[in-house]
Image (tube, rainbow, N blue to C red; front, side):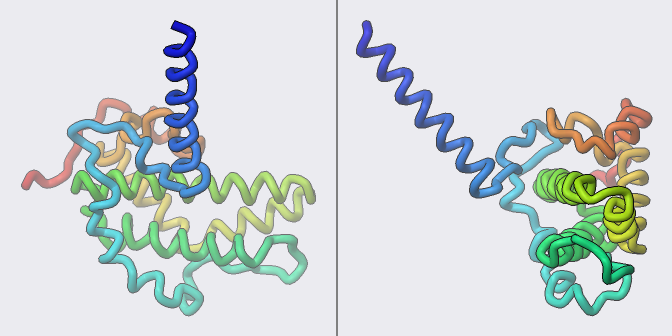
Length: 193
């Protein structure tokens, strides 16, 4: 009996370790989204390939996030990541507004929305250490025309039932909770195939 307990403990540790590595190291957070009839397989999303051109040279797009001051502590890697994420999410939600209606695309887009808001939260938490001026710089960085278009598209998608709280499972971004609560119970208006 003692042997079975040890074997179960070892197998449980292996299972947990694999999942923790997959989530935190590999970054495959889409594997842990809720399943169901609304959500597909994020790896099979066609919107990823459709939006590759938007990521080829995002620095040329003047509507993406850019720093408005030279006195900042924003890491250049964070700036590049914010720019890339904004370009990609803008393509997924604004350029291709019906992409979220396809199950596989929805799974990928929901995962990407989580990553987008997590990056914003991470940058704001870093900026808090340096005071209100740095927090204001980060807020301005994330208030580009493309970011505002993303926010408008998210509002449109939640108000039309294309994105609901259940799509996010336990990982609803804090910034989206009020939106999702406000339009809770709205019927999905995606075109039927």
